[in-house]
Length: 253
Image (cartoon, rainbow, N blue to C red):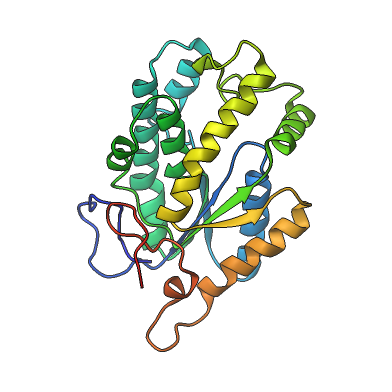
């Protein structure tokens, strides 16, 4: 992949393309992201590709602080957004960049798009969110697992026995009822993911189905990334994913 970002070029990177690939799997909680990332990682490793997985709140710098802040409900929306940006930046510098330079595939279980959507529904402007994550790499592929809110609710109850306070948007005071708040919050997130789908080149996959069916569709999107380049055009150009201008809007042609 090239070392293109959505705005701010990272210092110290070589001018030549990085040897690895960055694949993002996005979607709401309960959409099957974590299951799909695990399946995709196993499949790619069987094909002989080195794979490094990453996700939210996995940095050694601030992940514990984010967890404590969520438990206490003490920090404002802007502070939380900045903490998440620091978590992402730390992983980018110390995990994602080294893996890509080494020629590995990086599988991201969520990326900046979820972080942007969460910040925007809590009062940030879209422009502010774009600029905050302008240092993020443009991925080779962004897969969005699209599941209906009813399915997300059913899976959350089945897995955890209850709904998560934050994933239900209870901090936004949308409703005193947890279930109503969940549906209202998911609708707001869906609106933000809607405009991102065009600007950031999402590939939607129906996640209301069985994991095997979802996995088959995701593999069909990923496989062309590893075909040899033809006619001087690499797999990135053929997929259309991640084709964006520096300000995040999809490039034409």
